[in-house]
Amino acid sequence: MKIAKKKWIGGNGSEFISKVLDKWTYENQVILDFSRPGKPTDNAYIESFNGSFRDECLNTNWFLSMEDAIEKIEAWRAEYNTFRPHSSLGGLTPQ
Image (tube, rainbow, N blue to C red; front, side, top):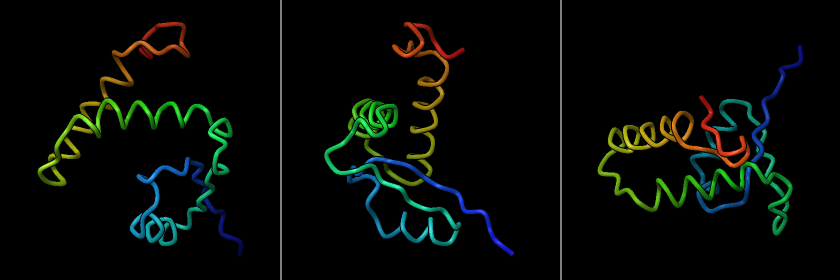
């Protein structure tokens, strides 16, 4: 019996290089597929998102606990996916 594996495609940023991520992907049978070093155009959408996430969330918050991180990241995600205009949508919000 073959088990279908999931694939995660991402950049080579330092936020995605960790033993924890490696362990999680192994345990969940997810294949890590990083873009080629120096080739951010391999996946321009994720590179754009990663930059926004880093600049607007990770670099502007100090996480005091896991719960605090979850709360702040979820608030940023909700704003990003609901209220924030996106250039890929012609300046419209996703909703």
